[in-house]
Image (tube, rainbow, N blue to C red; front, side):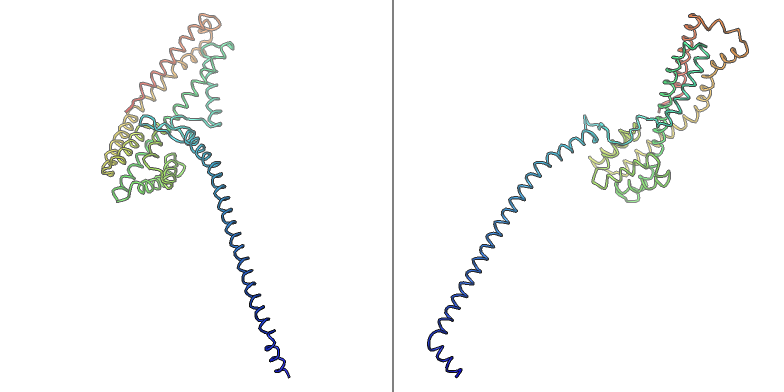
Length: 342
């Protein structure tokens, strides 16, 4: 019975028609899928084009907005914190680094030396004028003392920097003879100097900053030239100039540094010998500078009425002012005579 139904169904053509319809339906389904996939690809292509166009637009906007800004920032940083090469020399601007040519007092030091200078001014007014009307004279005396102390501190810091730089050159020369390159020799010498004088030493801190900038590809000769300009020390400046010439022209770096190191060491040794010989003369000059004030104080304490006619009248004030100016000039001349430059 079932077989007859199947045969009749096949013979009637309904099975073929249904198969044809299924085949057409499948084909139309595949066409629909292909059309849908094509539309999806077109949409995806349009989306990609849109994304690329948007990315390019954003890139152009970013370049337009940030590119010049970066250039302006770089240019401003170069003007504010970099160094400009003018007539073959480096002119250091404000970089946030220590300028050893200028000494700045800390608040504690300013109060300390300002107080000492004011006491010195009060003593000068009391010895020379013995009057409250001459109190303004204490201000120039205080300013003179503070400026002289600032100059002394600056020279001491530069002298210490120069002496430590000699030890750095000695270590650098040894490292170059051992086969290190200039950059690696500077790193090793900086480490040796930090072990010798401590990391708080001025030159050790400068060398640490130099080695840190060398990691970013900054030339070592440019870094030493900047240090020489900021230091105000002739030996460091000469070494940096020799290093620049040696790097540009080539040559035996070890031999060049050896001759430079010998010249600097001889100069520093000569200066130390002169300081040793003239130490007694400087001490005598300091004692003699206080002798006039000591004589006046002795006369006022032992002979009360002997010097009273000098005070309280215009002629005595003019005379004491002239003596005070003469004393200041003699003090400055004595200090300059005891200071011998090499």
